[in-house]
Length: 100
Image (cartoon, rainbow, N blue to C red; front, side, top):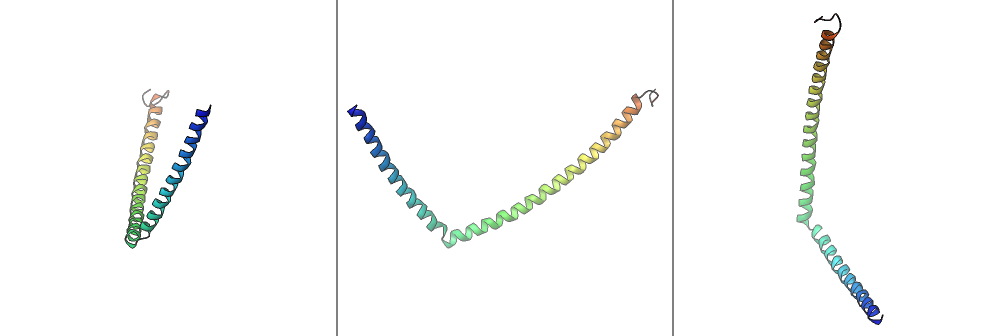
């Protein structure tokens, strides 16, 4: 029992020490990343990328709209043609129709 308590206490101390050390390292990295992100070169690059993404997004949205519109037209034409074919087939198969 004494060994189990000693082992558990050792694990607890190790865990607490490790998490504190890990937290300190995390805070250091976080601080450094904030410093880097505030540098003029990084700020300029971020702004340029945001502008490029905005331009590309507009271009893609326009292309998607065009393709969807063309698809819709083709689908409408196909469904109109299919309906006409179905009407002809129905007339042919009806009693007294074109084939009868």
